[in-house]
Image (cartoon, rainbow, N blue to C red; front, side, top):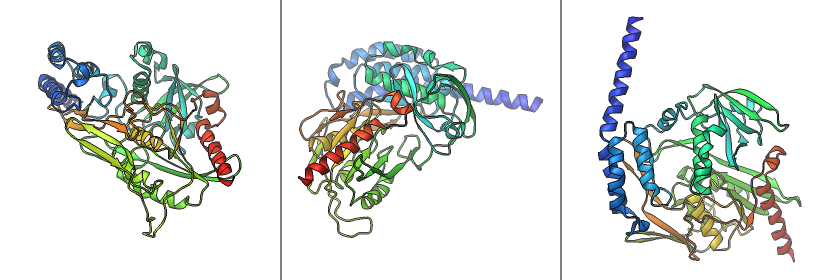
Length: 436
């Protein structure tokens, strides 16, 4: 017992020392963030913000920060003055924010995804074989409590959020932090089911599914590519391909999916919930549908421009000569589609090669870089702007769907995917017009 007590005391002392050391580097970390923004922001006027005045205001607050979480809060307040996306500090431990806020530590999930609709947290998708699936959780159920914390209490600050885009994103992140924990750990969740009854479930978390990919200083990501054949209302076959992040691991399975659906009546690309990734990939993905080296858009940094030109894909996965897919193409997006997903969708929309369905995307379309800070955290900062080939700036605006299809609880409860259904119906109209 004494040995265990001694060991616990050593661990506590070590953790306290580590926190003190991290806090002591607070000013050094603050100065690094401030300097990086000053020297690398794509707009020399820093979006009209007096950056020297911001330093004078927030540096004393950084010096007074007693914990790493408090320091991050100060940095986020200062970065918020820019009014732009892709300026954020990620904890050196990717799950540190969860422990700072009383949540569990770990990346395992209960096996379902959520979206914020109004002030409701709705289950939108349940992964087969997951703890949530085993427990009988269904799309459309409303999450009312996570552990002993009421969702309404967690999100009571929503009314004070500066804009709907960030309100939705921050709310989703707050819920995700509470849902995640260590692999195999159990989480008690309370729902309102389809009948309005309160249902309590104890759900075992499982590790995120997909191919693990690590890029630079970022936390590990898990790449998932989905591929299925769906029928339109008229009975035509359509390939539906989705992926959750723009990483090179997507390219091969996407190529195979295209090969499978070359004879289909149309293709739907599902980018809902896709936060972006490697922007350079969109040139090759676009090349499956466009046979010319057209421009998707231009990335403009402080001193240079980078043009994103379509790279036509004229061979299949076996190296055989093929033509690009020339049938109708739809893209489905939602409020969590961001960055490279927006640049790709907006670029394809500007070329009039696709029709876009769903909800307006996040409007967080600034290309960014990642720098490790003195305290070990990672600083994400935008270094360029992106404008589509027709001059549309997506930052703050987002991609506006050609056909807006809002997410509704009644559709989820009924097992309907309204946005995908609308895309499939549109493909029918295109095929009918092509026959005339």
